[in-house]
Length: 283
Image (tube, rainbow, N blue to C red; front, side, top):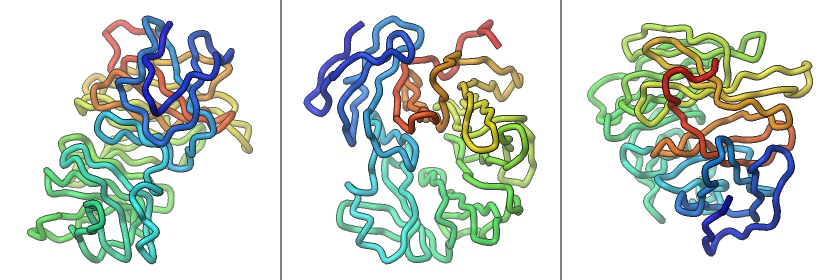
């Protein structure tokens, strides 16, 4: 197994948690070109001490571990966590009651009257979604041609994320047994995707990668990643790792890598796995 070297990262040792895991020094950005875990079915790079409070984020072909520092969000009196929009190749953030696009030192307002800090944007599709302080999941038109639309409302709904084509929204629901996921169409239809948490769309929009989590009421005891095919509803397990609890997955734009947080240690890891596995995978 080898790791292609890059000036930003340095191999410091081999972890023993799972065969094939490598450990690298802390880095705010890791290019995809630096990740080459060989032919192992599950090989993972560990980013030691990386800030994982926001979970891993892919910005184009780079895995970003601490975007807030580099984007200069302290310029805003109030702001939420930044999100990367793959459709426009830009960073967006809620700031002072608006959704703004970050362009270096400039902050361009794209939607006003927004109070929800947890949001997602598909600017090329002219749409954004947010969870508002009144617990409503709201869709916003970025061209101003239509009024905001409430898709769902309730204290148990959070973390809305748009599909790659901007036509549907994945929402986390607080429920027993490790949470659940809902798929909302922009016309208000709701589909229950079943148990799971931290769901993210695959780059082609045809599947969701999610975490199946079990806990003891105080902490995560076990967690593995699962791929859900949206057309068939088939679930395929991606990981079987008794010593690692994978949560908060993030799929790279090319679908070759999945970044995730190890809930047991808080460490950030990157694994080379198929986000949309071949048919016939183990359930």
